[in-house]
Image 1 (tube, one colour):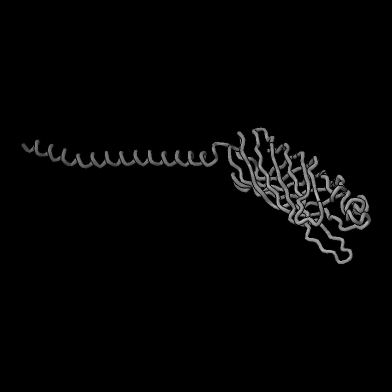
Image 2 (cartoon, helix red, strand yellow):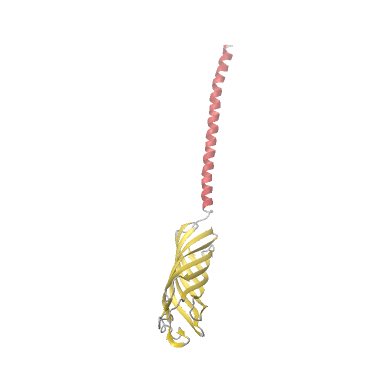
Length: 252
């Protein structure tokens, strides 16, 4: 009888230890599973945040070539003033600063050739100019950086003219064009061709770094300078504008 009681006591003493060991093993196993799950979740979250893609370098650059049409926006004309768009071109490059996956700042330098037909009444002449645009774009980007993405944005620009037949750069202030029809030899005004304004762009980049883009620029500075004669006043204002489309290539 004593042996049976002793054996029963030993079994009862072993049961808590077994239960404790089993609970401990289950807890450790659960903890290990939880750690693996957290680790896997972190990796998946990281991959999801990157769209499982390789982002381009923070600073990249490239080349741009555009065709354009341009003319003047004319407000409050005193005479029968007109400006019609003519075809030109642009060639230049850009430097791109990637701030985040979806946001970048891009600076461009574009050599431009512009022309339009400008006139007062029946007197018309084709105006042309060669210069440089320096725009800065604040860009939003959506899509996969490796498979292709849409980008769009806007920003300020400055334009400097190297040569033109505007404002005496090429001819004598266009005195033969900008005249009062009633006084054929009375020069009324000249144009200043350097200006600044705002610009917008939209485009798409394909996997190999090839881009298509469309751009719009409009001056915020009035290039009209009234040449006062006999106390005449005017409310005219002239603002250059340009639309361009083209292709680009970005080195990754």
